[in-house]
Length: 214
Image (cartoon, rainbow, N blue to C red; front, top):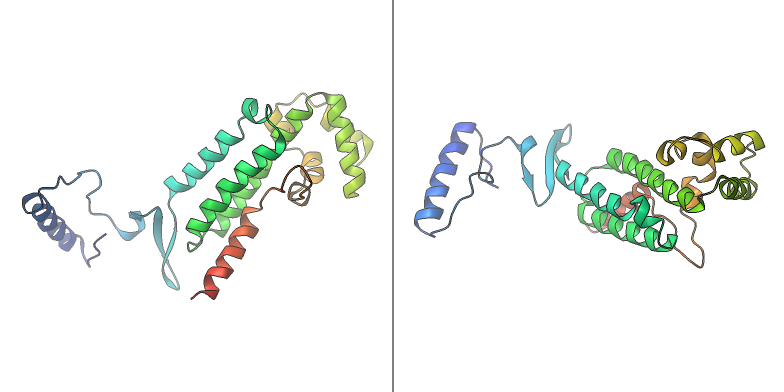
């Protein structure tokens, strides 16, 4: 990345550098990767850039955010995830999320982490409830969670959620599932599996540790 003050200066630099690379080093310059763009549109090592009141800041680029979501989608595919033990799915998702955050922790992304965390937990609720499969089993497990978490949801609400004819994704977006399979419940560990990582909390911890190293 070469930064200059104006578009015309950038064009001159790109032309001279491209000529030097091709004539002197005998390298082929990619026309798709070699271009003049503003800092807001540039990308370097997966990071994008933006400017706020404190100056220029970095953040994960849109392509890297989409790549993260695609990886999690692959792990939480319903047919694949429901056919394997839940702790395997949790461990795979946690590994992907932790690795991604540890790489991009210097970027500003609290808003994205909050939205991504909500989406991730929704995907996991789908996997869990689909493994329960039958309305009777769903009802029984929701009642158990209701007693353990002391949510005090009515039997009618739990019965309606368990017997809903909505699709798996829409069903697990209902209030009953959100309360009973809450972030706190999903983050609990047991002998079989580790809890689901909370992306926003993990990012805040990684950011604080990074600040201590400065």
